[in-house]
Length: 148
Image (cartoon, rainbow, N blue to C red):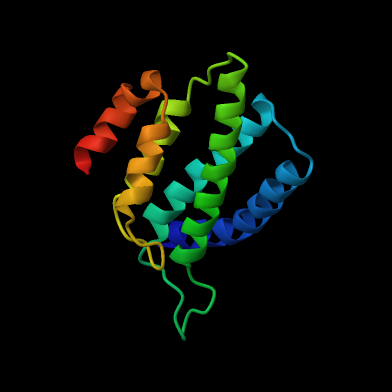
C-alpha cells in the first residue's frame, strides 16, 4: 500500500510538470522526434496512472486523490498533439515506429466512456477513416478495432 501512496504522490508531481511540458512544446512549435518522444512518454504515464490509481479517487476525506477526468483530459490533449506531429512527419516521408501503438491507444480510449468524455462513434469512425493504411493494418490498431 505504501507503494501506491508513493505513486500517487509521484503522479501529482509529474502530472503538473507534464502539463507544463506539453504546453511548452506547443507554444515553441517543436515538431521533431524529441517532441514525439516527450508526448509518447507522457501518454504512457497517463495510461499507467489511469490503471494504477483508478481506485484512489478524490473524495471529501482524500481531496488530493486521483482525478481520472483530468488525467484522461491531459491524455487526449497529448494524443491530439502527437497525432498532429505524426501527420506532419508522414507528409515529409518520415515514419514514426511507435505510431501504430499510439493510434491503437486512441481507439481503445474512444470505445468507452470516461467521465464527461462520452463514446462518440462518429469521431471514432472519422479517426479511423483518416488513418493511413499502413497504420490501420498494424497489429496494434487491428487489435484495438477488434475490441470495439
